Length: 257
Image (tube, rainbow, N blue to C red; front, side, top):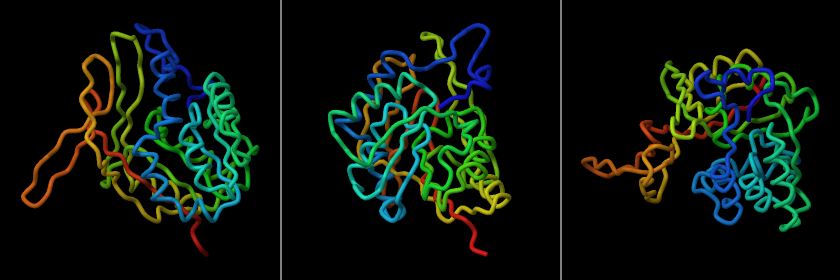
């Protein structure tokens, strides 16, 4: 979910492409309506109490809407609005959602870097695997804190528990395409949240419970798993291209005074 004001962050002079929404990416989004990702199911499990107790939730970076639809189908008493900067993805989300006829689901275009007060006062804001793909964390989070001011915020993104962040630019030379896989410090996020009256209440690393095969094409990014055996158990590491993916679920709430 990009920004018209900072599109230059996505542009490399030798690539000249500002959009990652190609036919392959669109197919990836659409197929999740029928086959939700394990991370979406885990997001539901982690945030189900907050989602069930909310009247309205905004999903920032909703893409083509599959994850927003999955959550809306689980909580019929909660109204969901999927928001994305890409009008192409929102059009596809609206078209696809007509097949399911959920009364508590809607979609709209919106720039996470310039939200305005259109969605102010909703109970919750969520974002599923989008924040790390933005150029930075401070501006989009500040927009949530200042413009929407929800009671709670649910994120899934690449995080690190220590006081270290990594700004990662990924170049897929064969496409050509440039994207971000930024890893943010949870401690820095909490300091930022504190400045606006919020705090990180809980965070948990997403441990995938299925094996994902390695893509045959090594020249494009695509998540796969590798098993690391320990003395007592084993873990599946999530990897995409040359990167280790440290996905976390993070819950923020307003600080009680």
